[in-house]
Amino acid sequence: MSTRTVPTLESLRPAPKVLLHDHLDGGLRPRTVVELAESTGYQGLPTTDVDELAHWFRDAADSGSLESYLQTFAHTCGVMQTEEALMRVAAECAEDLAADGVVYAEVRYAPELFTEGDLSLDTVIQAVQAGFTEGERRVAARGQRIRTGTLLCAMRQHARALEIAELAVRYRDAGVVGFDIAGPEAGFPPTRNLDAFEYLRTSNAHFTIHAGEAFGLASIWEAIQHCGAERLGHGVRIVDDVKSAADGQVQLGRLAAYVRDRRIPLEVCPSSNVQTGAARSIAEHPIGLLANLRFRVTVNTDNRLMSGCTLSSEFAALAEAFGFGWPEVQWFTINAMKSAFIDFDERLDLINNVIKPWYAQRT
Ligand SMILES: [Zn+2]
Image 1: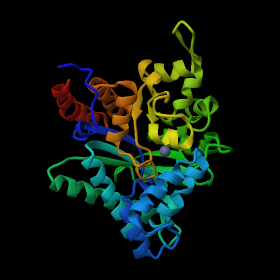
Image 2: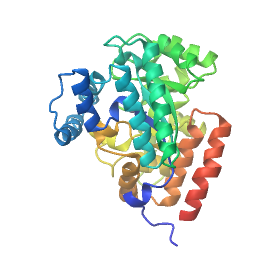
Image 3: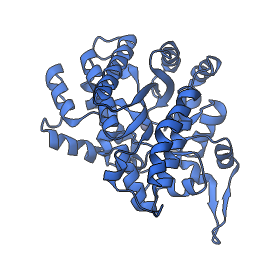
Image 4: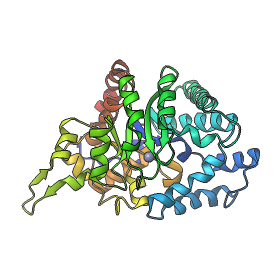
């Protein structure tokens, strides 16, 4: 059998996949947004027609700027201000990911965005974890499997990073596996939150940082060298430090070489990058070059609702654009599993007992 078969969306769905970068408030089912708006009394939706709303999210996110892309979250967060809503969204997230063949997922959210009602940060975290536990239970009842972990995000524009980092550590034995900084990059360098990163490092806790999406190398350099990020959320602008000569020779600058040498994982989200203007098209996305150069590239969804995507559809789009076959899908998947924030033993178990056996039959 040829290993160059380009996988189709249908064939990719049952393939065991690993997702490291997915936002809880960016992955709601459109129907759930409508139903939660109804039950919680949220008035702000542009339409209560499920199909129209699904299209609205995609169009609004297609604006070409990160800032207006982020505005779509006013509605998803608007309907997630109760414990019941948070539990439902988290449970459905686990179910939807499992139905797409995801066997391990790290789903992130900023607890402070769900305290506009009367919820405390602790209640938010407990409700989300209860939802994921319920989702995993439903998935197991269907004979499927998924392991989920959460990352707590602090918002760049707010000044609560240390408080959120402390929560990430407090709940690390209750389903929280790490920390992240999200929100607009412009004007909010990650070095504003050095106290949070120092606290996490001295607590032996894991964290990633959104960097190198809208902003370039300086943002990546700060995230790694000042803050100590283990992974980069997006990180695709690292290509700005890669020079391709006319004869096809490629030269890495010192930062790009450092990122590759240290195997720092890049949480690449192709469709999201096209929507925010970080890449012009999937075909022109830097992931092709970065994968060729063997950076530790992983493939992710970012916001499934806003991009109308799944992890399988991201792989299908990449396979079509770059001719990736099953060996590449397996490579991205093992890259992601190696880069997860759970224990080494668990990562190894998923690689050796779930991922490799499945792909061995494919390739
Ligand atoms: Zn993101």
